[in-house]
Image 1 (tube, rainbow, N blue to C red):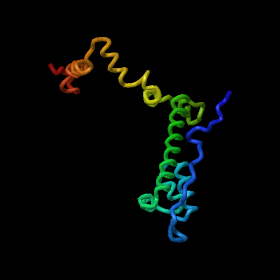
Image 2 (tube, rainbow, N blue to C red):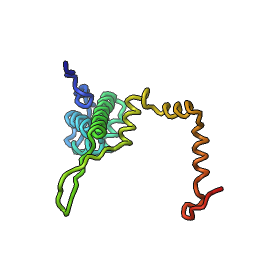
Image 3 (tube, one colour):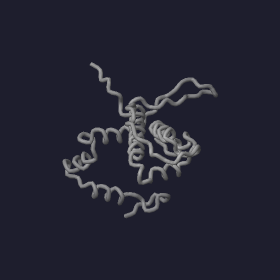
Image 4 (tube, rainbow, N blue to C red):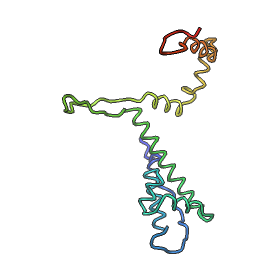
Length: 171
């Protein structure tokens, strides 16, 4: 049985009522407001979305600040949520599958190597499964082994040389 529910990044944006403004050919028409919201969901970047509709980032924020722009603000936030979901999916894909980097020999590409970002993987594990991989586990490990993490750090720092260039010990 497969789940046919689209991912959060592919969910359609909720409809919103554009802000009724005085008609101007170079202003925020209802079509431009809708196009801006769609572009914002696609790019997750206010500046790019505003440029897509031929207006400035400042104009977009000015429209958002209007007292009668509640629906526009809600649509804006929903569009950014879609953008964040897309970013989350992309990060998960990079953590799982790595990033291909080309391998060259004598100026010719002879293949590619997969690079995996372990810090990204650790972050995603801590975020997605904090019960198993959360930072609290680090403290628990130290406590189970009767080790005071602050004392351990202090002891390690005291063994460092005072002047790293000289190699002389602090004590």
